[in-house]
Image (spheres, rainbow, N blue to C red):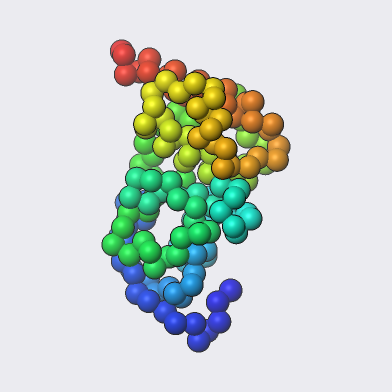
Amino acid sequence: MMASDEPMAEISCTVNGQPVRAHVPLRQSLVDFVRHGLGLTGSHVGCEHGVCGACHAVVDGRVVRGCLMLAVQVDGRTVTTIETDQPTAQMRALQDTFFERAALQCGFCTPGMILQASELLTRTAAPTRAEIRDALSGNYCRCTGYHAIVDAVETAAARLRDKAAA
């Protein structure tokens, strides 16, 4: 929680397709802004050191660690969270396969995993299991052991390729 006398700044950005104007504390993290300022609780506060990946959001098409980025840094930019009403084809496929392949348990890491995997599938249509593991290496999961997560990403990639070929 920021002190009431914390210096503030006005920002304007687009979050999940909606224009947002807000006064934010200069030192407020992006994850705190989207969670507490906007009520979008899909991105989680985990380690607060940029290590666990629970705080992921997408800024201008790139996954960022919301605990390391300040809210003032998204002024004039586009932010997408897991709650978007317009998920990409990759996000939709991953959400389906995470459920089908039991790649989630408590769900704490799932939004960050899906956003990171979506970025991978945007760049690489047929990632190897090693490439999937590498892309997700900055995301911690304490429940699943990662095998089901890698399976889900691999399955989503195959479905997206099949859909593109049809």
